[in-house]
Every structure is written in structure tokens, then in C-alpha cells.
Image (cartoon, rainbow, N blue to C red):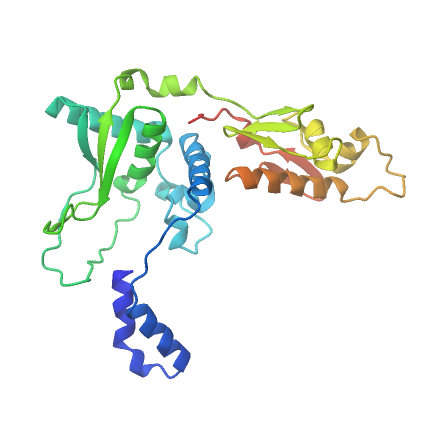
Length: 308
């Protein structure tokens, strides 16, 4: 932002459009302050996101981390540019933290990125920033420091007391990236990856309460009993690994395909409604695989995931 806000000043006079000139001047001369108003919504979303990360269920551009999709329009991500699985991420960071503990013999520590070297920025002026090209497919790019720190706190391995980004203070001449002030817990030695897996769950659906238990959330799938979403969930959970043809679903609901009042896309629309409901409570938008011919539960969500 600090870099981009200076750019418009160099070519405003060359811009003929008055609105564009005004927009550039506003952007170049305005300080923006972001204030989060709905912290509960963001916190709930973040917990769902971290659950997906810890269970290796992040998809698409998210495989490059939180900021990956902000700067790339590419739809296909090379395998070797995706990050390590969580077990590997955890192994790297825990080893690094425990080495820090052995070095200082204290549980209150300052933890920085294991692969980040502080960079001198004392020669920069004002709001200038140094832009450096990152190394593609370097092993250090496969490690997600902040993600893993947050999950370690959820696992009660440590408690994050404060954090900073960039220089540590007004007169600090070094960019230090993310730094976390943490306190290690007394139980951290028992909180290894095998212990985390003992809390693994798979989705379950209660036909009576119409509640889906998924990703640590209890989601009411239908307000009305025997509504189409309710009936669809009951059908799918009779055999969660099955790909159900839409005709089979309607027959399971008690319809005969010869009946004139049976809408062909009835099951399809119910599936869309189910996915919308789940997406409202979690980050997951593809719990069901839906086509106009068949519906099934996405197999990747039938695997155990880590409850944070």
C-alpha cells in the first residue's frame, strides 16, 4: 500500500480523465485505517479456515496461503508451489520452538519465522518500501509460519500474548517479519500430532434434530421437518460413500417419476440449499458434489479432520 500510494503522483498530469485524476489524488493523499466491527463472524470463519488447514483440506488457491489468491489470477497451481501438509508444518515449527526453549530455558519466548532473516531497511526514506522478488518453489515458501502458530495456540501448545510485524520499534532499522511473544504451556509435550488426531471426527447427521455436526459446528440443516433439504440429508447419510442418482433420491423420498407434480430438479435445488446452509456456518462451499444427474457427499470431508 505504501509503495502503490506513491505511484499515482508520478503520472497524474498524464491522465486525461478527470475522475481518474481525482481518484489517484485521493488515494495518494489519504491514510486509511481499517477497523473490524464484526469480530465474532471473522473469528468463527478463521477457526473454520484453521480447521481446514490443520486437516489438509484447503483447496484451490488457498493452498498457497491466505494471500495467494489476492495476487494471482492463475487457476492452476503447480504442485511444488503448494505448502507442506500440517504434520510437516508442525514438526518444523515445534522443533524450532523447542530449540529456543533449550537455549534460553524459559517458557516466555519471542518466536520469529524459522526461515526469515531480518533485513536492514535503514536506508529507506519516508514511506518507501523495498520490493524484492521471491524465489519460486523454494522449500522455505512451503512453510506457513502464521498459520501454524495459530493452530499451535488452538492445540494449547502455547499462548500468544502479543505480536508485531516489520520493525520492532520506532528506531529499529530492521524488517523482522512476524514476531510472536508467546508463553509455552505446561502440557505442550503431550500435545503432539498423535494426540491431536484422537479428537478427529467425521460428519454426522441427526435425522430427528435435523442437525449436521461438521467442522466443529452443529448446523441446523432445515427449519421444517421433511423439507427437501432434510429429506436429502437423510437419504445421503444412508450411504455416505454412494453417488446418488437424482432419480434414486426422488424414489427414496417416495415419489414416482411418472407423477406429473414431480419437478426434475427437485433434488438438485435441495442440494444447492444444503451447500448454502453449510457455507454460512463454515468456510466449506462444496460439502455436496451436485450435478443435474447425481448428488454425493464430497469424499474429502468424509476423512477425519482435526477439531481445534
